[in-house]
Amino acid sequence: MRLSDEEALARLRAHDHGVLCTVHPERGVDVIPVVYVIDPDGYVAMPIDRVKPKLAPRLQRERNLERDPRAALLADRWDASDWTKLWWVRAQLRHEPDPGEREPALAADLAARYPQYGGEAPFVRLLVLRIVGLTGWAGTEDAAS
Image (tube, rainbow, N blue to C red):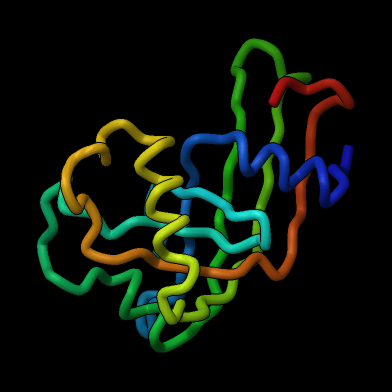
């Protein structure tokens, strides 16, 4: 069954991780697991952190978004034994570089949600994207979120 935008957003907010899809100019779709938070205005922040090792100072997802600001975030629940509990939500996103006004609150939300970010200055920067569309589906009306 199709989820309302309100229910889709509620599930996306409650979920603790998702898959970010950006567009690479040669390979096409680039997919990477991410953690995120969503502010009350529908902006999604994903950290570029100092906690996990990085291969380069500028990540491919950042370079992809500089070339093409479209992206998608997918969150889902899978249950191999009970398909009535399945659900997924896809948020269509648009990268909008933040002039810094949202970043302090979003950084605080990320640090509060994920204890691994509790240290001093855990973020190099945040990727901030605006939700421009939502699509969601659930196996049943009461599929667990």
